[in-house]
Image 1 (tube, rainbow, N blue to C red):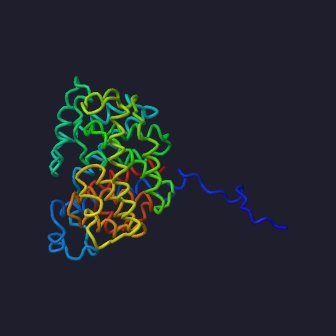
Image 2: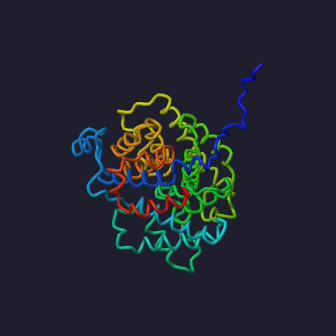
Image 3: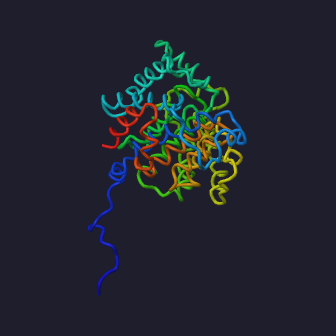
Length: 356
């Protein structure tokens, strides 16, 4: 009698890291982020009727010519360069990470190309980070949960080989350098976790549930070795556990709204009406994910839906692109778009290093 039980020693499934490398998930995610950023740049601050009048039907939106990006992509690259430098010196660790990322952020602050309507939180924090004698916790804008931290966190999710603890700590630390609110930390952690799951082959249909489980598990985990005494700079919480739980609770609330939206998707309705306008971290995560999850096999449609929104269109679209690229890989993006994105060479080099 022949057994029908699969033999795991015959044609075993490749490990997650191999699957991510085979599809070039890092390159796909970084290019997708930049494409979404460029597509959403001209529509940010516009309502949907104005976007439709300017661009025509949203399903036919074309990449602008030239394909110029915003501070979202610039800061993603700054973080990526800082992480690459830190990793060249050994295992990723807080002290090894802080200096090069801090330097990259302040270099961006002084760059003449920092002229793409950057957020006030990033500008204020980076100006303070430029003082080498100031502890980074004092530069952090503890009251800000703007989306400027999780729009750039994709590189943390794309680095292969990080343990979950290291990925969570690095995602929260890069947020805390500028956006110190606990919801900004939690949303950045969730964004990096989602990108890693997708890069490793997770099915989009189960993604929201897995993120919710992760948030519940992490709800009172304060990464002191990465964040130091950051929580003490907030006057709202009695303990580090209370501090971080406040952020996870806000993310859990928006994940509930996202789960309901994914169960009954309505693609012709502005996603911002469902999960928020994206100016704040948890809403940018949820609305970017919603756009991706409505069209998991149609990456350009996901970007177009994200760019045709009333809210922070470039950040929503860059997150949707990062998720889609991590899921589908570099071949998701047509050469007619990918070949003309600003910073193309640097995006490809950074992606190739983590796809190798």
